[in-house]
Image (cartoon, rainbow, N blue to C red; front, side, top):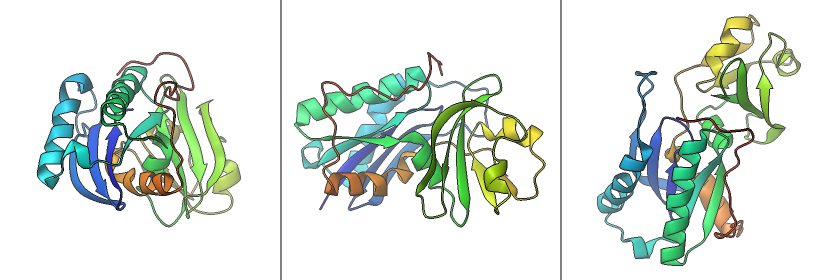
Length: 222
């Protein structure tokens, strides 16, 4: 049985989930999707959320088998907060560190089509990747400037769902009939559970001392 604490702080959503065998048994998050201008202090919320999910599930820190953290891309500040907390727990509890792609976990909120998760990278730029309906990677993660033709290769083949807080930029310029837009979604620790459990079973762990978030580009604050 794998009991894994999942931490997601790469965007404005400060999110913590407790996973047992890939199933989320407790979740705490502060997702500001209805308040886009609101800013949060993840540093103030994160430790409290960790304690709350452990209490809710009646599980001790000593019962944890691993810590999973969203590795990016995303907010520089948010990633640093989440990774620092994850590393501290791994050191203290002497358990493995698992790193989960922020864009992959965001993409897992969608089923039934090719998925393009997009996170805002300021101006007309987004962090994006492309996944098949079975969540296999089709195109690697990129920081890209959006144009109306950015994803025509995939749109010409069928339905494509664009999801994340960077989608609004693409919706303005994309008129393709196969495009579906989900603008108010942010990554959540709840989608990390199954990925983390698989990585744990395959021993895909990271060196706690040397692991760094996947920033992809220079500093972007929350």
